[in-house]
Amino acid sequence: MKTPLPDKDHEAARQQAHVDLLKAERVVKLWEQFSIANSDIPVALQIPETQWEVQKAAADCPPLFTLGRRLFVLTSDLQQWMINKAKAEARPGTRKNRKHQLAREQVDQVAASGRRS
Image (cartoon, rainbow, N blue to C red):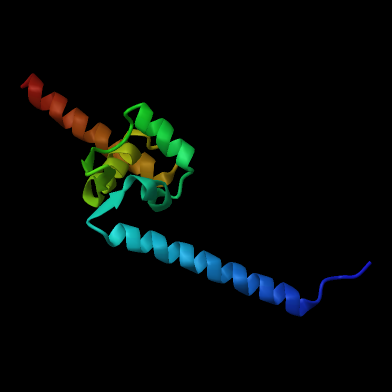
């Protein structure tokens, strides 16, 4: 049984690294734009296209608008949607989330005591 030559393995790894770099550069360029086309949103979010289509069908997406026949989202709206989604679906298992949960509880307690006065 022959083992692959190290040069071939090295070349394959180099090519894969180059492909990964190109993908990462594309994602960065998308986020630098003022708006992102609907077809590029899954690329920017790094999710499957089918997941994006399911979320759009369920109205679980940022506001979209059309220019001609094409559908777009403002990058700022997409970022805000992601922030809101992360806050709403935060899992309390991490230290950071437990810290934020404690802070929220303290704020609620102060607000409740202010209402009683």
